[in-house]
Image (cartoon, rainbow, N blue to C red):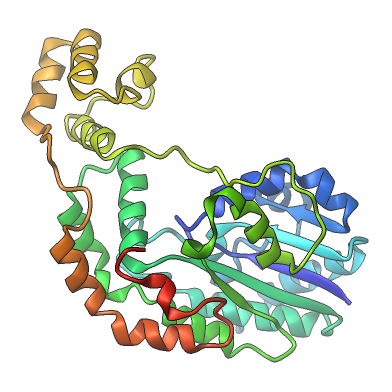
Length: 323
């Protein structure tokens, strides 16, 4: 039986790094019977899974789309089609609304309908990678700041509603899929960095003999705490650092005093004055130790239930206080 593996995210849970690995290893995977299907492939070659979270059973157009995907799947010659695109779940939280993947149920219904449309001759294997809620929110915030966000961490947190970050809700929806579908959820913190690529591939396609050329996962640029504070102030001062020729020279500098001097050399005195009004050397960009403990305490029972689900590939202990 052919297999359709759908890696659906989540955002800020290694998705870009996994996709970079799959892109690099495309030829090797093809030699091992696995066709890689990324965002560009979905846009150019059909079998576009990116809108499944908009599935509505009452819309006849959706049935035509799913039938087209099923026909294309039947024509795939490889044993496994591995599709990876985190936007299958919808938009990253706090970008367009405060909800936490509010249409995930539609995605799940779309997967069930696709399973029925294929005649159940292709096994659909949804894959979801998650991380502990506090780590997730801090990563989302850092990413958004690097993309121009001007909100403080506390303001961002209030806009997201941290209490709604429920992996359990998503897991229960996946677990309720028909038995012909094989969902699985991995915990990002359980993948050792030196061999994370191997762990990711094993999670996606199962035990394999694929010899990857690289074993680490590398994705979006990671900024230090001090760099994020600098970027946040630049955003708030409306200084377009992302397009500036001096971006790497200033933002990439690890020494605070040197970075500030370089910035002063590159921008007008008026722009630097605006920056100084916003720059806070110890600006908060994440939870304090006390806040972290209080935040995680609100998820204790939910996370215990989450890890009790058979589709979750780890035990609750991996989300200990030092994770």
